[in-house]
Each structure stands twice: as C-alpha cells, then as structure tokens.
Amino acid sequence: MLIKPGQRSGAVRDVQRRLLGLDLPIAAAELDGRFGETTIAAVRTFQERRGLVVDGLVGDGTWRELVEASWRLGDRTLYLRAAPLRGDDVRALQERLGALGFDVGRVDGILGPRTARAVREFQSNYGIPADAIVGRSTLRALAGLPAVSGVTSAAAVREREELRRFGPGIAGLHVVIDPGHGGEDAGFTGPAGVRESDLSMAIARRLEAALSASGVAVYPTRESEASPTDGQRASLANALGADLYLAIHTAGSNDAAARGAATYFFGHDRFRSEAGARLAECIQSAMVSIGAGDAGVHGKQYAVLRETRMPAVQIEPGHLTNPKDEAFLAAPSSQRAVAEAVAAGLREFARMPVAPGS
Image (cartoon, rainbow, N blue to C red):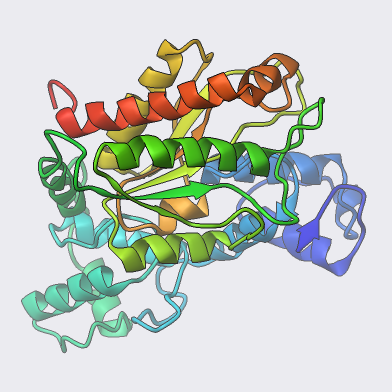
C-alpha cells in the first residue's frame, strides 16, 4: 500500500485518526481525508519518533507502525501464536518484565518465544497460573508491583555477555549478506541512472568474496532479479541461525547536496542492541577511513534490523542521490574499497566486540 500527499480518501482519514490519537496535530481543514501539509508533517514526526525512513509517505512499514502504536497494555489479551502479536502493548510488557529481571529478549514489540517464556516465569514467581497468557490476572499482578527505573534489563546484560563469544577472528562465522531491493524494486536511482538494487548487489558480491576468502560462511538473501520482502530476508537469517546480518543499501534524499555514509542498528528511545551498535561503529569507522563522508551511526527500527535475532546492521556507503557519491559508488574500485572496509570493520568487531571501557 502507499498513501501519499495530495490524496483524499477514507484511508487518509484512518491515518489521520491514528495520528491524532498519538497527539500529533493536524489542521481541521484536512480532516475530511485530505493528505495536506499538516498531515505530511504529522507523518514525518511519527516516522522520526519510530526510527523509520522519514519521507512523509504512508507505505507498508509506516502503516504497520501506526497500527502497532495504537495498542496499549491491557487493550487485548497477549499470548504466543504462530503469527506473533506486535504492538506497543507488547513493547510495554517487555519493558516491564525486563526491568523486573526477566529475560524477554530484545524490546522489539514482537511477542516471540522468549517473551512468552518470561511471562510464564513471572507468573510462576508471582503464584498465578503459569500459562504465558497476559490477561487480567497477569495485568493486575504487574500493576501491583512498584515501578522500577534505572535498572539494566536482563536482555541487555545477556547481549553484552553474548558479545564476548566473538573473536578473535572471523573465520568460521556464519554471515547473511542482504543486498537491498531487487527485481522491479530498484530503490533509489541516482541522477546518472545508477540503481540502488544493482549497486547493492555489486558491493554484496565483492563483500561475499572478501569474507569467503577469510573463512566466513556467507549466505546471500537474493539473486540478481529476486525481491524478497524484508520479513522473508529476516526469516532466512533466523532460520539459518546466522551469527551476523549485513544489509547493503544506499541512502537517498530530496536534498541533492546530502551525502556521506551511514550505518544503522536496531534501537529506539528505550532500547538499543549493544551488539548491533558496536558492529555498526566498527563498520562505519572503516568506511570513513576510505574517504566516505561520515553521516554517522544511528539506531533505527527498520524491519530487517528489528526482526532478525542476531546482531544486524544496515550499511549505506553513500547518498545515491548526490552526484559525487553516485560517481564514487559506481566505480568498481570504490565498490571493492567499500567491501574491504566492511570486512575490515567486521574483523575489528570480532577482535574487540565490546567497546573499550564497556
């Protein structure tokens, strides 16, 4: 789906209703279902808050986040099912249990097996039926406990400990490389016509060669013309039990002057993947060393970062919409340099998975 500025429809009214429910202002003149300037501003603010691509468009990802943001803990019964329940109510449950010392895994708003196990453990400790179903009795038990703040969650402690299993080298690691987009989905297209999907594949192939030569088992998520969904890409990595997940994309902007490389990991205002952040820092540092502009390291909730169960990063070695970055990235020598920089960042991560002083 794609709902965009200028449209007038019931779908726009639904988007507006959800944005207003999140205290994001929209002018009364637009509430007849017109996707006008204040609706655009509200969508962009929402996207920024949720760690999404900020483009003012309501595509599948933004719509999914709007729906998830509408749930509050207690609105519905929570339980483990084949298609996991998702929402801010699940995220609130994870935060509460994590602060109490129960290991819910990452605070990602997805009710998976680890969160269900934490619910069961909480219920058992509290003396209520341990059925892993969050209904009235479990909600009352949680509400009756004092709020806990400033406590490192069990998930954060576990992730830091798991970091220490890496190293000292990369030989033997199982790494998923995910070239972004593909097929009819070209991603960004530069002013000279270079397509993000082609560029990400070219870099991914060079990276696969570099890592394979170092003894890494590499698993690509797609062939040249394939275009799996983000969920399919993440599911493949999870099914393989990969050690690391590397998504290759490029950045793009309406501002043609915007340029530079950036690396993203899973994180939001209440949680960050320690392993993902460290991996992103190592790769970003290596890319900057080859002359790529530094657009920083950032926590985001992109689907491939949120849904993968291992340390995951999305690497964007430049802005394809910038003529200079496009020319740099289109050169085979630059593609080799980017691949070698990512491999170097991975080696540094394996050598020192926990940042000095942590």
